[in-house]
Image 1 (tube, one colour):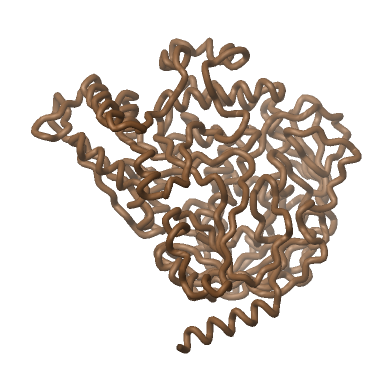
Image 2 (image 1 turned 90 degrees about the vertical axis):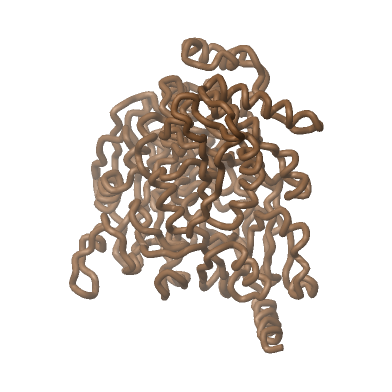
Length: 624
């Protein structure tokens, strides 16, 4: 899957929820150009550029990528419509999250920010150089309009900035955000993740004389301030973006040595198999992240790879490993019993799937904060136990008595033992097997699960679990729909079960409300996919948000992780220990890539001679 897939865009958009609440206090008159919520920022630690980039990287060439399904809008800030790939590159935030360090942001549209000792507000000072693509300056009025409109039209922003009461212009270049609470160390920092939009453009008229409305989808190329703008597009199938030659921010630190391509081209496919075939032929996808372990292992034997035009390379992953899991929709009564969810967890044979389908290359996830100090382990103790203790009566008893472990299928008898326990749990929850069918003891209705998928890959992911569930008498099935329908149903929670991802950082905070809170459970488009409504979980989220220091944040996060696991809200799947990429050999890649993000395609650049030679090779092969 290329960087242009809708999933990549969704992650980029929802990444506004990744900063947290642990930094050393500062004076209210201290302006900061870098915001770190983990490391102490000293005056000598001036950020000049990312250490991995080549500041002299040449500009030019094309990066071609694939996207899936279709698109019908260039407005990514509303639930309606499917936004086009790469649109986030048009827009900029006040600060930009670092690719190289967790919980860190650097100056972008805002050149600096400050906040009082009690964290009750934040003031951002805009760069006087910031310009829209039409040449007009970015002003405090734009920031205030963006804040008010995004809170109104975007469920994500409405939840994320729920404690921000207003934005006030102190002058043309300074905006103060006021909060309805003090002591939330995260709030001053996450305001830097606010997208800034041009008020004059959105309140103006299009070429037909029609008034624009940010509340609605649009296929008019929007005005932005970012490094790229839309050059041309074919509705639903292709988008071409061009580098802004007079981009205002080209020389600011976060952009030095980056955004090196003259054009970005996104071509849409209906599924990943078709995209892979296109990749092997060349011309439509230059860089591909290979998520299929089987394909990575046995299918890279096509002519372009054999002659060296396509390269395979693995990059190290940094930071917290994203949880990927089967999630059951607890808005439906049959999934509300914890015993049922535990029984379903007992039916997932990861070891067999890894051996038969993934060549033993994947690893099992066992935490929502895998690969970090935030992951729970062993028994709760110390500060974590202290945080959990007030909720003892509301939590599963095992939280305090047992170490959480997922079922392992490492022996011949393991599967039989796990399935026997699953049947027992179903029986305790009011379900029994009759004539080979798992039915409700009172209604006689068969237990049914329909997994929702958006591509043929869903069959690989869920096929083994579905087969096992059928052995238990469950009516288990998979429905694959097109990408647009998948996104719509996913956002509206119209599914029994789905594979979901929960990206995290080393400094969790307000975004946890969108993942797990009662309020988010019934909000379309939220990331509370399971529909969790648990007062104890809500309280633990607040413990994270209002943590006084790093030690308390870590303990509160481990407590939340432990509670999520023991409630069996999801069945953890697996992850790839490295990031596997294949690319056409026309790029020069910096010797190092970012420690945290693992890869930054915008730091690569095109070698013109190689690009021309590869294009000629592709043409010759097509002519044969």
